[in-house]
Image 1 (cartoon, rainbow, N blue to C red):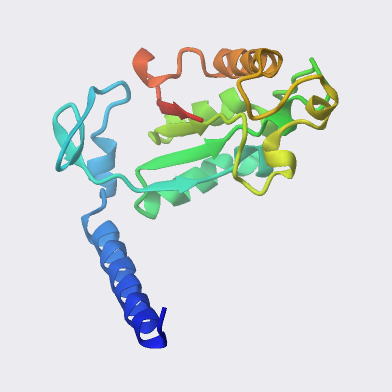
Image 2: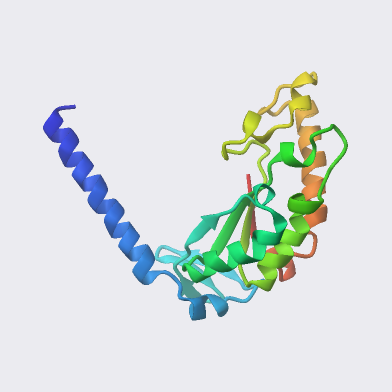
Length: 193
């Protein structure tokens, strides 16, 4: 690519980023508009965008890795995100934070997923759980616990032995989020891998 073509492409990219930033800031949900989204609302979409109970929204999502933040700071951080115009929060559930030792799950302290979800519910902030099992969040081993690499299975594959470990992890996550999922009138809009 020539230098001129590179500079033109870069200018277009910067202009596009600026336009998208402006649209996100100027058209994003206000605090009042966000407060009007009821947990468990019917979520639909069309070629123009996303709707909650037929009401169009322009979602703006921020990321917080709750297991990396002291639990006593969660409410304040979620409130700041909401006041900054965000309408959703996403969070990874890093496997290696919760099952450091095979078969021993720790959901206490800043690892307490259910408490984090309850705080988000109290702050009226819907959550997208990013449950992996592989996580792009600057986590060692992509979030996989160290012990999984000593097992006779291929990680990040459809290997039945690996998928059985993943199923066990997902079952634990579900037990933490039970009753708080969007389908139950809760705040977990989507669980994403």
